Length: 448
View 1 (tube, rainbow, N blue to C red):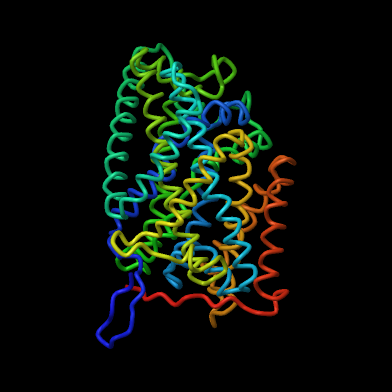
View 2: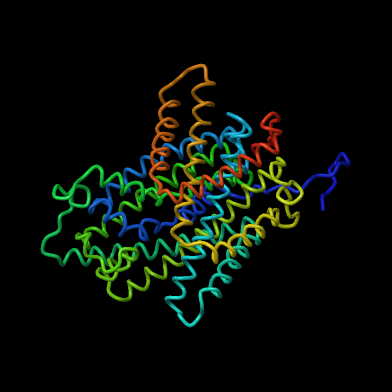
């Protein structure tokens, strides 16, 4: 229920500013996962012919350009709508809706594939419990975590990050100990191996390695729940990408040193677990497996949180039904309806979708949004500015071009399914705007 203000008018419940820069960093790192390159290690290693380190570093540079665009746009528009608001207010409200529609697919697919992966991984640990039971359990778990309020979510993120970093340190210690007992180790081979080096192979590997960084944009959806958003969103977005990239580089570098022959993994999808087993034995093998499960839980919960905030931003502007999507729970200051709505979608998706298709569609939505945000940053900070500086030109342009290249490299089934989703969004946007003749009124949000 709304509470009266001093002038007697009813005040609608709003999101509560409770997050610091550190909270955003923990949230961003959990959303991406400190162990993000581990599940991709085997596939990237094979595609890049052993140059995982090089692929991860190139991907980091590519994503940093887009991270800068997100951070700078959050400085201009500290809104829960994120890219939806940036594109809508800088370019066109209809394009803003399409961006938000694509982001919604991205954010809702992430917890779905996390639910699928966690359910299958848990089934490997306790095979007596069927997949369906695990799927219900994780869908309920993610939803329950996000119904507790933003501060409780922040505390959970801190514990998850500390736990994952402990295991990563354990792996590094085991890897160093293992390498010290090897007769000859080439320290430069993970960066450049003249016997297998190929730009085409590295480009293919990089297009997969970019998945290491997917999720950093979710930080911008918390703009209305952070202190000093004009400063902290930019810092947290760029720092999260940078920290993730440096940590990922160290992880895959150690992994390649321990297991230099990329063609001999017992299983490509779980290659890093075997690398950990070679470095630290069966105990570390199982510890890394369990850590990846915990990391995926954190990522799934975090991406559902971002999806709920995005839907709130679109609902508040009445691009989605305001009464349902624009509502805030007065006691916990969270968009409860959206959390429950995404929880139902997560559960349904876990039974109707494969992990591979979900991951590919996630990329489709993510890179449409990335291109939109880079375009919005270009319009605001280069075209509209009186002084056309190189620093306002290069990051959004390079970010747009690189994201467009990766988007075009997606497989045909993902492009078709994603294209259908976009067409539905275009049709709905045309309906809401009377054939794009009316503009969407975006909510004004105070910076603090």
